[in-house]
Length: 345
Image: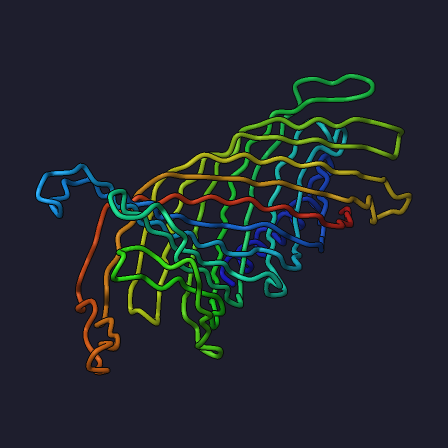
């Protein structure tokens, strides 16, 4: 909500400023469309030690893996404002954009876990669950473009952009399977058992805040006087901060750091012959990112379970337990396709 207010305030100021400057052109562009893709994080932990079970030291690797994938498919919309030269609009421009989602994802959040113990059993996927997702996604962009090549049929510009993205999801219920462990053979059974529960309960909340600085190029290809195709690409490193709260286990995981990213886009624009309705545009974009860092986990209450022998509640992990330096990889990819209508002032 704060981003939305700031964006609209700046756009209002730009409209007022443009009306006093005959050499400037301001275009306000509402847009609506669809977003699809995912953001995921993976913990892949290897413990290396000497195993003395047989009496002799045997080099052993114990691997624990957890992968969570959060869906991003939703309807999206927003507004942007662009300030440029009235005499030569493609020479330079500065712009702001705000986008937000209107619906929750129809795809499921996926959570899978695996384990392997090199001297006992191979790496095995031991559980898989799916959950419904409720999502708020907000995107704020600000940038500028400056043309350095201008030909009859095309031009090329340098672009710089700052992008802030925040994803907040609540995961409700779970439905899936797990693989029981054979304590006699010290390995997992081939068969699985179905599990489900917490149908009306928020089991996990996830928040990812990310900033990107994008350096790149864009090119306008002039098909006719009214019909233009625009291609954009940019190198876009990221700074991120994510928090994963497993509410059913009273465990909070946090991670932050740097990573790499890429942004691209493809727009088809048609100029309209009306006074203030200047153009209609079909726009599409791609945004990818990845980072390798570490995660810290802390239990803010006792995690409890049932003792299989006594059937009594026991403490599995005490409150205050903390684990750090867990390998933590984040990856994401999103696509948007929008319809835009330019309103010129």
